[in-house]
Image 1 (cartoon, rainbow, N blue to C red):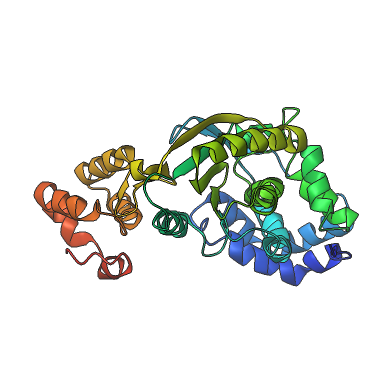
Image 2 (cartoon, rainbow, N blue to C red):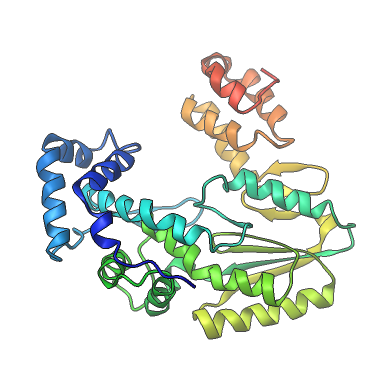
Length: 337
C-alpha cells in the first residue's frame, strides 16, 4: 500500500488554515468561540501556523456536556481554533482513507448517510426470499473501547509523515486507557479507519455479498441460519483478537420479519421510522418547533410514515403547517402538502 509522506507542511500553510476556518465556521457562526476567533482572524491563523510549524501546538481543554438521545453520552466539544486544525487535517487525509473503505461503509462519508444506507439495505433484502436471514451486530461501547495504539498503527499504514500522525493522535487523547473523545471531527474518521479491517474481513474473507455498516452497527443480509452462526463466531473472534473490541448484542432473524436499522423499521416492501422518532416528531408539532418538524419530515421522506405525519400536522397544528418552506417540501418530496 502506498503511504503519503511529507504532507504536514502542506496541510498547515496559512492559506489552507484559512480554508479550514471557512469549513469550520459553517455550523458555528452563532457561537462565541467562532466570533472571538474571527475578530482577529489574521492574527489567529498566523499564530496557529507558527505553533504547528514549531511543533508546539496542543489542543485546548474540551468543553464537556452530556446528551441523552438516543442514550447517555458525554460530548467533548473542542475549542474553535482546534476545530480549524481538525478541518485542515480532514480536508487533506479524508480522500486518502476514503478510497480504502468498502462501498457499504456508511456514516460520515460523502453521499452515504442514513437514507443511502436504508436504501441499500432494502434493495438487498428484496434480492432474497423472506426465509433467508439477516445477522445484526452491534459493538459494545465502540468509541470508548478504541485501542489508541491499534488506531495509530492503522493510520501509519496510510500516512508515513510522523509529525502529522503525532498531531492527529493529539485529538485521540482521552482520560481513560482506551477510547477517543466523542465530538471531534476526526473521531468520525477514526471510527471509519478503525473498523475498516473488519469490513475487509467480512467482504473478502467471509465473502458476504450484502453487508452494511453504520458506525458500529452492522448488518449481514441474505444468509442461511448456519451461515449466520458461523459469521457471528468468526466476526467476534476477529474483533477480539485484532481490534480488542467485543459485541454488545447480536440478532438473527428472517428477512420477512424486517430489520430495525439506521433509524428505520424496514421490510422488503415498506419502511417506517422508529416509534421513538415518531414520538419526537409529535412533541415537536405540539411545541410548534419548526426545526424539529422539518427535520422529522426529512427523516421520514422515503417512508410510509410520511403521510401519517403530514395528516397529524394538519389536524394538530395548522399554523406550523403553513410555515414549512416550499424548498423543504420539494427537497423531501412531500407531495401530500
